[in-house]
Length: 270
Image 1: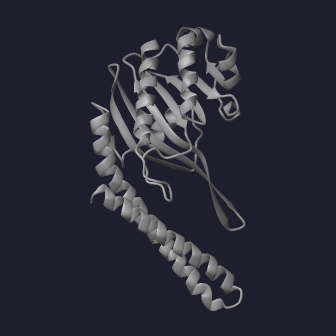
Image 2: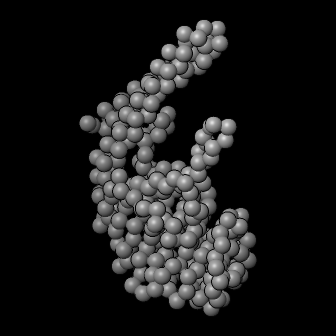
């Protein structure tokens, strides 16, 4: 399938989605007058379900064929797998995201930066609530996580959490540490077992680089744990997926490039 065919199929599925939603609304209105319109509601919901299923399949095909090819050309030495991702254990080991009822992860990128192996994957964390026989799903994190492996463990674990979110995290035997940057302290809360490790690693230039990451996400969380640096970017969007009613673009490849350049600078400062 050519890219033009992918675009055409995307438009057709979007059209079907609009038609089925219109049918659903029409059926809902008429159902009050005539219960036989229940079949219209059921049919429209069935069509919607099929449309979303086919759209997801089209998105996976698009990523497998076109995104994978572009990543190979534009990001030398980096591999991409649209269906691979982090498991729940790896995500929670970071210590910088809340536990959730449902964990989804895909779009794995792997490679080497500054002689350090790294992985990056989209993740979604969702909580499920039940009330009055209804189920409600709330997304608490939607973005990506970078994991960079260092040869030696860090001298101490350090957790850097957005100030407004730190109330949700409990770090046993750790203290809240103020850095040398007043602006950074207003935005982030830093936790460690002792101040020495914080001042050893969080030099002014590194603090500045961590602050720069906020350009790419609504919120940023970071941890130094064992021999790994974890960076969670809550972008509130999927990086590579096709999106309904949004034109097909490849600008997110440039976004990944910029993030990798930032991470190169971060590695050089640690």
